[in-house]
Image 1 (cartoon, rainbow, N blue to C red):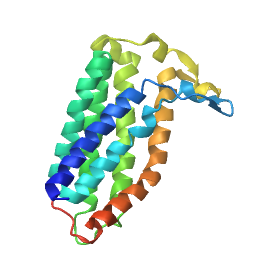
Image 2: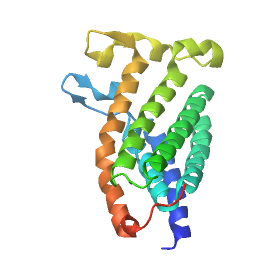
Image 3: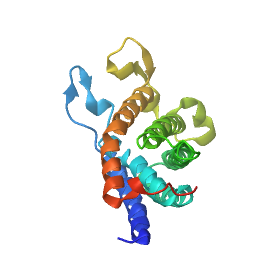
Length: 217
């Protein structure tokens, strides 16, 4: 496969991740984990969205930061269109902005860790950039989408999301429901980081990128 074909595949991969995640986010998990009702915290979309960081990091390693940003912009465009189709303008704004900021941060951190004479170990750039990107993505999305203090500014308040409830439905601490949703979502993103290092490593080895110089930003 040529370099151009790889780049097109990365853009299509990002678009596919966004489309699938926007569909699966409509389906809560069934069942429970002990006393924890999973459907109250997670949707299936939480398990596919972390793949966006895998696509971004591979594009960064293969083509450099400039091309990786182009891949991110493709995902951003798809995310905005789908969000306006399936969600309220407030959710669309939160989804698009959080995706763009988090993924651009991921690109920058990844590129930074690959610069200089002493390169980081192969797993450090994707792990570190995905960690901080996930934190920013979750914090931005759930705050912009549901926080009551922003409702006078952006409208489309969600009374159910802002209802006070016990954290995770278990702990003796009250918080708006969306805080539990955010923590559940973040936990999946963070658990996905070490798991996705395996396909990332396989991609490097199968494409020969592991032995090639890092692309310039």
